Length: 119
Image (cartoon, rainbow, N blue to C red; front, side):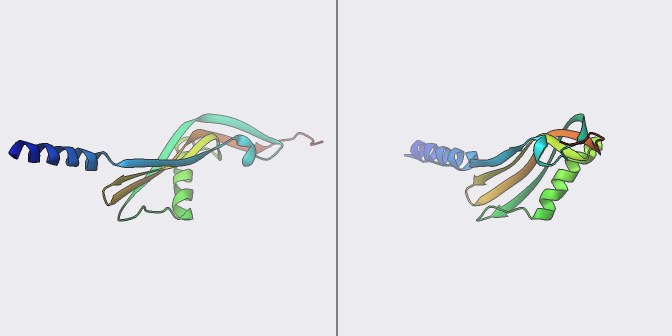
């Protein structure tokens, strides 16, 4: 009987410790934020993230916090815009504790107004 209790305790501990994750995100290509006649120079890969913890329900990120993560990513290479970026939020629940991470990955790029004549 004692062994059964130990096994049940171990199984329940493993189930609670594993957690359940949800990922929500989207991709951004350069066309959404770059001027039509802009000269875009890629500077390199960047990554920035912010993590929040909360009890009972998943934390949310305010627009200022999202902008902060985006700007942290750009600051790594001194870029003006993220191109070919993946923006996502990963939330994991551990029983009643939630951990959410907002992630910005992509290529930082410099953007300057081009001299091309648009048709």
